[in-house]
Length: 188
Image (cartoon, rainbow, N blue to C red):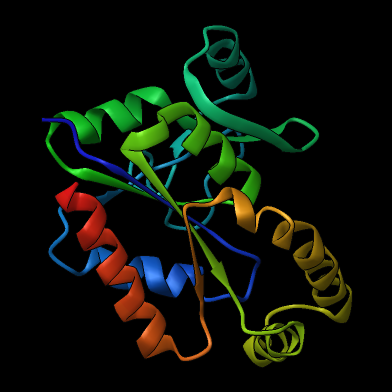
């Protein structure tokens, strides 16, 4: 039996990755979809675990062969994408696939897999709270924070294209809501 797909998308700072990591530790038979990239590995990143590292030529060939579920050229010559074979590998084991992707990727994956996929949009309670969280990370410059806040407005416009919106005001409540949402979808 093929596993189901769970797509989590959100503006940066919404808590999406925290929620996804929490769900991976629960008993949902979830496996994280490993993305492909044409960039070089950094530090201790491992091929097949952190990313599938491909040359730009290999990546472009896979695009031509329609081997990607979704892909994007993030910077000139720097590609990221989800291989269809990665999804098949996980689903054929009977595991469920979980994605931590941007909103455009999330919408595209949902369109491709339709009823086999549940698309969840994680939203901060307000723009002010998002800004507070981004500043609290102490990882981004003022320019990056301003860019992420601007992008938030754009990404929020996609929320109605998702099956479920979880407002992450209190993390414990959002985690429970995410667990309940997955449980219900798995039972279908």
